[in-house]
Length: 238
Image (tube, rainbow, N blue to C red; front, side, top):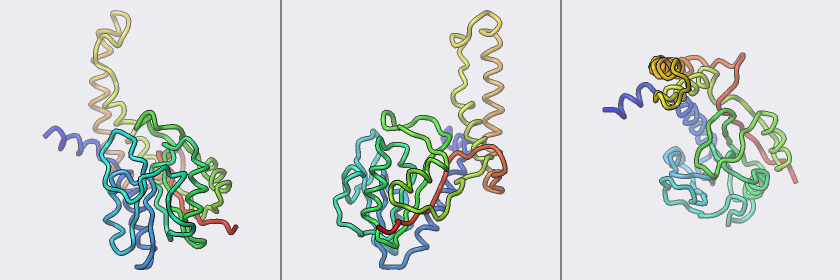
């Protein structure tokens, strides 16, 4: 019951946008295409690539559930030949790489000359999968690294809109704002701090749901900042 309530109030529009992004990638491929899911984790997107040849790669070092992957390896050293894949899916992985440029160059190596890299990574997101969390990226950081890695950016956009970012911040308040008096100093704040925190947590839970749903209805990008970027890039001719 608690999980159902939490999933209702903490609806995450980013997951739906990311699924849409992956489905779009899958639909762009001919039936005989070769795909690498780089940093695949539990391979949740494998189902979308049933019509093509799907392979996955991950180093399996984080304490979390993994699926059976094709290549257990460092993404900077994937044990396949050059020009193997028509598409590399690289979602929510770059922040976890100590040397992202080295990995981008390796993905460039395994992509066919006319292949495509479909990538997403966070700009505004809390640390996760510690200690393997190293960077956050602006759109200009992406463009800089991809060019150095041998790619030309074809398309770069916010994954979700600003309402999705607001929803994420409201969710963070609802989860993390402390209610114990021990977290406040002074008699006034020890009394009223927890009360205000409880009020804020309740309001934030409702707002998190509202803005996440609003984000799916309208992807607002005129101001504010995104939670994640997504992009499509192609190899630059050697």
